[in-house]
Length: 348
Image (cartoon, rainbow, N blue to C red; front, side, top):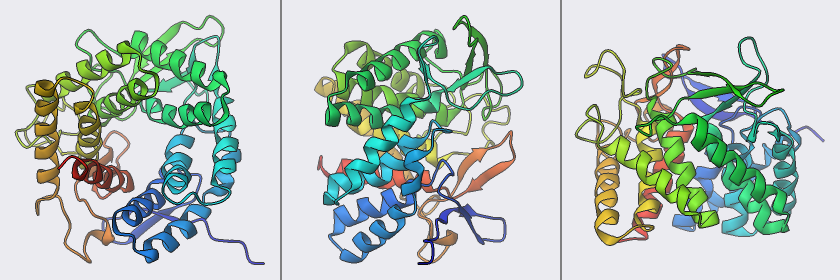
């Protein structure tokens, strides 16, 4: 039998040609996850068939112990598939993947290691890693194994202690000494500078702590999510339409690139967060999320059918320092935009 292809859409290049990735790319779960969301909304069996097919291309990543991104890769795809369709076998894939992810937990540090060691970083942990804890909390609920819960809580607490500044902005990368467990460096990899507030990183933190409050009920996680939300919403460099510049401290504001992906992640998080607070605060968050959704639904950001490589949103930023995926469509922007729309729809 011929092996199933594992290529998935990633973005488009400067000529508008589709750029694909293998299943091992950290974004592999977002396109199948989007298909599951569209099936959930529409009931269209064509979406379901496509979701099942594309999701199957990622199955082998359940054994991947070389990445911290298995939550993005497996929970957005297989997790949504299990929730929406109860597809047979998805639970086993997820449990295997959760155990693979848990191997990256470093007890001497209290965090899941993000990237592998490299020059200048012994044990780098990035704020993005907060997004993969929902996967392990699912594994805890499904298995009853408290080690998953303990990993998530310890990682979240360590991140609060070391990733955040006094104004509740976050560093992108914190690297730890593998022997002492102490912080060795606080830097950036995708932001403007080590001390700047990389926009998508702030959104990852907001979303992650909102999820951790939902999953644990621990007040400190709600407090952290509220602090991050207020930092972002009230930042003097937040544009009126609420779609952030790629970095809140980009030197060329107001001409800096916008990041639709940061706006989409933020909107989805704010919608959930709005239901965790009093009605006045909740309505203020919902108002921001609604403005973000309306902006992303405008011609400035929403692509016309058949254009933009058939991606939904325009104007996302992968990594300006890395000169990679700048002002292009990205699968995670589309995923969190669809998620935000579905979450908002349930409220109206």
